[in-house]
Length: 580
Image (cartoon, rainbow, N blue to C red; front, side, top):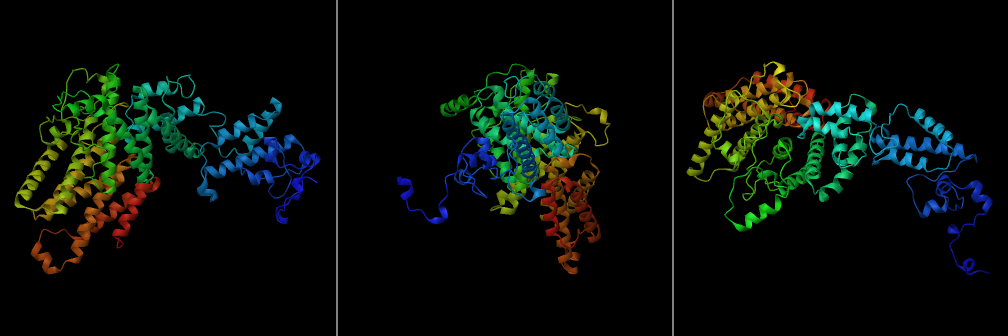
């Protein structure tokens, strides 16, 4: 007797060695596919118990290989649909690339080509309602790519897209393999496809949103530490910005900050904050640090240099807006506020027109602007206007936080007052330089600033001005409260009339800021006594405040229809002011 039979095994684990006939006729589908021995134990065979697989252990009643394949393909397609739509099926699992896995498995089976086509047609007809543009390829077909690009590129500037549109589109549609150096990087392409699917009005394309997200995350994790040449670095930064903005819009702020941190770190290590700097470094240590970081070779042309300049400011603006949304604008994030890393890069502009050919150099770009040393021409509106509006809002909110933390001396209070007066004047002059919102749409070009960006720029400046008036009102400045509430009402009215602003995730924060200003004043007015009202004066009728807050929440509800971050902001408002 062999030693194997003498081993004392508990009865419940004893199984009989299957015969060859049993393995041929009774093996599970997993074992048949992998061509391994199967003991035929049901409901789960020994092989599937020892080596758990994604597919469940399943037996076919018929012995027809073709029928088994058809059943397997149908089952896998149903599983793919379930994993792609966990909100419908109740499954919490995610699948990075199910379609490619299914196709790869089917393609390896040794069946006649005509029969394989029949199986493919059968699986396609069984899931016609879930159109699959990714089957059999690491990226969609050229026609689907065109659709995704058309969905995304017209709104790309709202999500931080800074690359040259025509160059990017030509490279994306180039007849070259996926991952070829002549095309955008895989992470960037999938990030763009992700936004194209997200913005698509076609449900079948939207259903692939999770696949593009998983692919973008997989590729960015590889590309971020391995970006070496100029194209790889810029494509990785662009992909990180798009992924971060996507998570921002989805109200996944931790994930947004994580990918934003990658974009900030890579842009600074590439020296994008020191483009065209005329700085002379007095410290050898700092000089060596800056020289080792700025490893990008000189730009090949004005467009490539413009992409680098605009790329840095896209990262900068996104970081400031995310910090405002999470409520911590004074947080030093990713070294942007490091005193040894002053920003000398010139303001962004439309590089197609050769505006960077003047050979100009810069130093302390933001400091010069916020100290009134940069000229403000009027009227002017270009790509720098939005960036400057973000800078001004961030600085004013930091002033408000400084007041909330308290001022310890008369000198500190005097300096704070001077800062408020200066920024109010700067905001007024800058806003007067912007074109009116009533300007003809023919003013805007597809590749330059859009009307949506002009509206957001106006709203950013109004929010900053509203914050200054709110500070004045708390300090007892006459008429400041009326200006503050009037500006908040103007913000709400403007956002309610906009068409595509719901796409930009910062719009929810700006609208919530205006609503909170009105709501806080309404709460304060309704809680003070009549004597306090007569003593304090300078009050606004509660009916006006209530109407303004109701209009603001109605606007938020409109904006939040397809934006989780705006839905989150609206829920916070409704919880803060349940009486509305």
